[in-house]
Image (cartoon, rainbow, N blue to C red; front, side, top):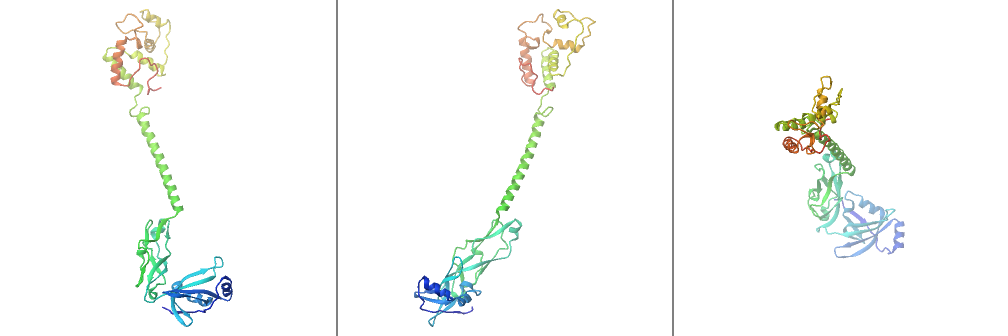
Length: 349
């Protein structure tokens, strides 16, 4: 280690104005204390002071102060600077014993690169820039280094990862963080926007898929849909088991939905003819579909009935027969309201 010597001059006046005059003359007020000895005030030449503080050791350089012919080993404890001009206002020196450890702050230098952090669009955030170290004056390092090559996002390098020279040890906890791999705010915002866009696309895709499935289950002709043909077949089977013909009634419902055209009857009114118990003449040109449509009005009577009474229900059937039909139809298909003349749900138009 290079031996640094700094000449001092005793007998400086104290106070703000005398100190200002000394600085104008190119001298800096100073003081030395420590090791149980009395503090001594003096002045040093600013150019010589700058020379001993600009070596590789920096502010941790071991300086031998020549105080009135007495050499005292010391280190710089504190430098006071002007807040605006940054000129040195005052300097404090601390006496040290070459065989006793002293605590100093040593600069931390990061070496290497962190490729994984860079690839993730992150940065290396250094949180500790100087390391408090305990060492004897001859073992004080100029600086300490920390390799960040293996650093990843979310990981940290700690004091324990710093390799100190022999004779020096850290003066703080080993788990103290020195540098971390972090994602920048802009990167986090970009990731959040990308995730939000992906979530929106997924929600849209799921919504379209759900509509497709719902259409298959409930749409016309889809799975689970019961069209008018299925319901009519259920009613016909139920009536057939009871020996009753419902063909005319079903054709009336189909006519209301527009599936069967209204038939015209030429000649005399077939409604009156049938009510009177007569058959239409050969000259009448009514098509069978038209006759069936008239029968579907409910005025025609099933076999074995002589007249139409108030006790007859829908389709001109007795109430007990209609109840049996509806009971059988309920076992085969959806419930039917005998008082509801509107087309059933799911019928085609």
